[in-house]
Image (tube, rainbow, N blue to C red; front, side, top):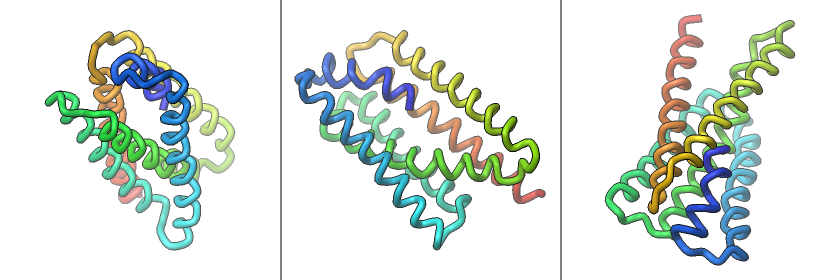
Amino acid sequence: MFAYISGSARVFISIYEVDPSYFGLLFGLNAGSFILAAQVSARLLNRFSPDTLLKWAQHIQLLFILSALTLTLSHQLGLASLMICLMGFMACQGFIGPNSAALALAEQGRRLGVASALMGTIQMLCGAAAGLAVSAWHSTTPLPLTAVLAGCACLSWLSGRIAQQNRAKA
C-alpha cells in the first residue's frame, strides 16, 4: 500500500502524463477497488474461511502484479493496463489485509494487545521500507512501482504459504 501511495503520483503524472487534476480520480478508483473488495470479503466470510479467502487473494494479487511487471519489462504497459493491474492488486489487498490480520491474531489470547501492536509496527516498518524503495529508485518507466509491488506480493504469498503450513501442523 505504501509503495503504491509513494509511487503512483510520479508514475501517473510524470510517466503517463496524466493531468494532475485527474490523478485524484485514478487514485480514487484504486482506493475504491480496495474498499469494495474489503466489503465483499466480509460478506464472503459467511461461505468461506479467512484462510481460503487469503490464499485465493494472494494468488490473484501475484498474477495481477506479475502481469504488470512483465508488461513493464517488455515496454508494453499502457495506462489502461496499468490501471487494470493496480485495481486488481488493490482489490486483493482488501481481502488480504483483514483476513491475514484475523488469522494472525486468532489464537493470541491474553497477548492480543501486544500481538496487535507488534503486527502494526511490522506493517508500518515494511510499508515505510517499500515506500522508500519506490521513492529512491528513479526511472522513466513504472518499473520501480511494479517491481516493488511484485516483491511485496511475493513476500506476502510466501508468508501465507509458510503460515498455512504451520497452522496445518498445529
